[in-house]
Length: 263
Image 1: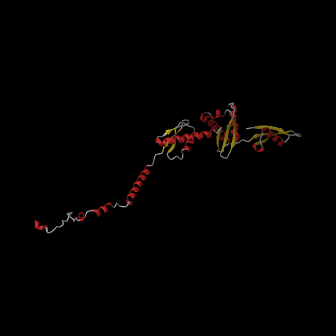
Image 2 (image 1 turned 60 degrees about the vertical axis):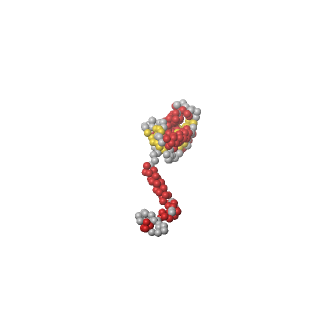
Image 3 (image 1 turned 45 degrees about the horizontal axis):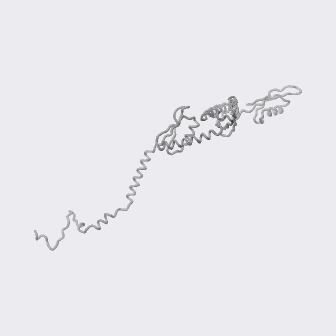
């Protein structure tokens, strides 16, 4: 936050000189008249202070850290409706990113605390350097889908290595709509990790499917026309085979006379 005191013959002249010295516009500063001296030739002292905003706080804080660390890097801040977006650039950007973005995450967390301390706007703050965030999202999304395929194939859960909240969120988002696996978080920070778990099939659903299949097979069997084998065999059966009485005894045919005379 920049501030300067200017003494001039008038308030307007002092304000103009202060704005030129700070390189700011009038709507970006707060001006206060401190004192007025002289009876004939008056002198007016004005204190001009840069207005405090979230973007200004973030810019001053991050660039102040970079300057104290003696790193060849700079930060540019862009304020939007939903968040503050900070872009790091320079030869030593990799130093501020750190191993898997751990330094970048720490810097982002501290900057967010500074912004919300005096300006509780509820906005997010995202710090990125040389598109590291975008590259990391692509890498972790690919890894999540690869492991999810293996888990669905073997039906065995797999635990990933500990990750920060940003990386865990990527894994959860990548597999949110997966039909075969789901994700769970276990452990405590900083050792909290994601487990990819296969989805168990619903017993009732499978039983209902099997029941429907069985009913369908029964309907198929009932819809088939009856076999004509029995009818055909009955038609082709010898004539004497149909001459059964109720007792099942075959009728005897008479050949040339009454058989009683033989008895």
